[in-house]
Length: 146
Image 1 (cartoon, rainbow, N blue to C red):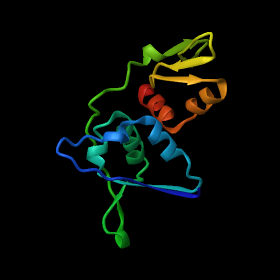
Image 2 (image 1 turned 120 degrees about the vertical axis):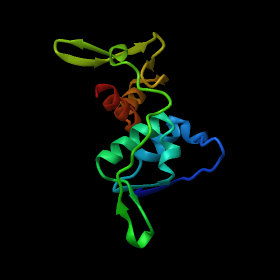
Image 3 (image 1 turned 90 degrees about the horizontal axis):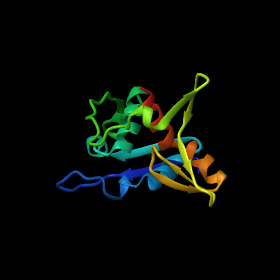
Image 4 (image 1 turned 135 degrees about the vertical axis):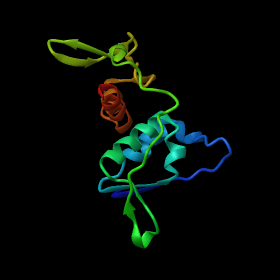
């Protein structure tokens, strides 16, 4: 798929993101575009979720957020709220060995891995590599390294 258009519009009294909280859905939706990704949604509502907040912070830094009528979209700089949940302490997930940072992963003898930062179980080395290179995982890595 060359361009992906994702509608993240949601309206409820609590401002909850609902199924958009599922990082797996977000990962699939945001990593399949080859040429472009267009997200449509209410930034402040999405920013209440830590994963979306990290993505929006990155998009804000890269000046990729626009607003306005379709024929006159203009870049905007948002003052995003801090997420309700915060990024984990760097020391809990990263070990330093020989001056290099190594991501802490728990493994079991049945071929499954647990990404402690994302709190997800991964089976097989191909799935682990795919997860580690995934968009949301990379954003969380940037967030804890700040």
